Length: 370
Ligand code: NAD
Ligand code: DAO
Ligand code: ZN
Ligand code: ZN
Image (cartoon, rainbow, N blue to C red; front, side, top):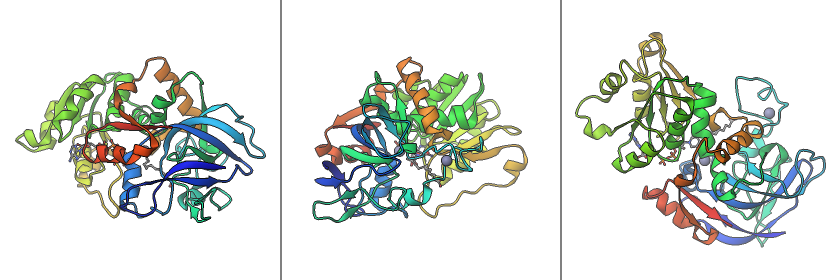
């Protein structure tokens, strides 16, 4: 079939809106119509050329929601008409990783997904001239139609609005899941969240859901304060206005250090501050932010000897086919909020404006509606 897509032709260039060819689903694959997709920082990271694994030409986008149109041979868990959210972290339920309750990092299609291909090693997308276009994170939601492996689709309830639940495909699940699945925050905890963007706000609402008593938000940008308070932040700290070293300031503010700290900036210096402002003896620091290629973290090992621990999380530790439908339920039941975080919507033709809004720090989430 022919469909309309925003194609990343080369690093550092705006996306080009064009018609492309899309082959139908092969065995174990599913064709979906994408109804809405968020624009995430990871798309920008790849488009900018900063992602060492970025491949071009490709159709980016990994935060979508849509409807199944056709299923390939052997697909049993989905049928045309089902509402779905694409998963950049699939869940095959069979590999060594899926069978280990300690991780959500299904490895069954890792190699081909990283190479921009479907599991059989080929792409379904070509230009109208027949040139191959690569998939991205196994999702390619910046196309009105896309093909994914069955194991990379979460089936969700049909009354949930696409323009909101697309955000559960990355930002919401990453932030809320970091609290619930990775840190397993207890009622009454004290926590610090570094970075109050699209991920950090979801960490904050995850902390509220978990019953944290103190939720400190740290950001260089004072304009982030109001929205973070709306989602449950109890204290705001702008490091440039503290007038003393940040770690002792935060340790004092949290009465000895936080039970849990989260980095949602991707800055390795902030990651160190997050670790060192966790409570001596038991504080846990969770890295969510993705640092630039080649960046390294450091601290004095005595920080760990004295009981702090340093961990990371991808996709909020969520097993997508199992957990994403539950997060959609939480949204529909009012346990979590999404609507205020969708600050801008646009058509596919305006998608580059969504990237501009992100660069200027004016949006939390821009969502493309097809
Ligand atoms: P964002 O740009 O919307 O938010 C980052 C926030 O950090 C901004 O508000 C900015 O003002 C603030 N900030 C920057 N430097 C700071 C500093 N030194 N001190 C305090 N605040 C600072 O980004 P986002 O969409 O929220 O993503 C955050 C990070 O999470 C990115 O690195 C992204 O790649 C990563 N991410 C990780 C996963 C995962 O599964 N681990 C998934 C999605 C995104
Ligand atoms: O199994 O090695 C692997 C791949 C893990 C991918 C995790 C990606 C998480 C961070 C990227 C940001 C996603 C938007
Ligand atoms: Zn993302
Ligand atoms: Zn698996």
